[in-house]
Length: 95
Image (cartoon, rainbow, N blue to C red; front, side, top):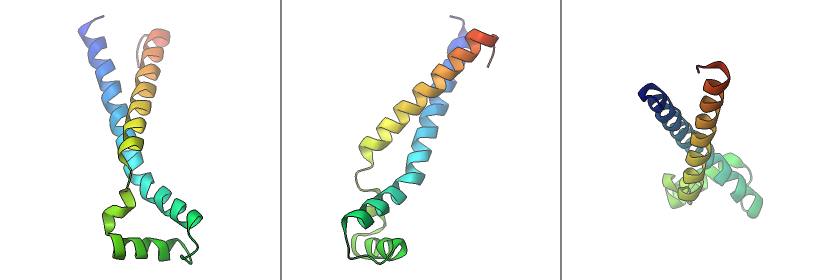
């Protein structure tokens, strides 16, 4: 394996890791609100749920339990990016 190929693989892993992190940070609050709405009848809608959670539990309550999903998303995306890059280099000789 050449130095350029190793660098490209590290770039793929890094880009995938960041993609997983960013996607989960953006998506997770909506999933938290969805679960609260599904499991509680005290909310009249998503805005009522969000407002109540932020006022009573604080804004970070939208991110409760994010540690495991964020780790999984980072691992999944990094492996997807790496495998796509490896396949593209094997088939086409470049990215």
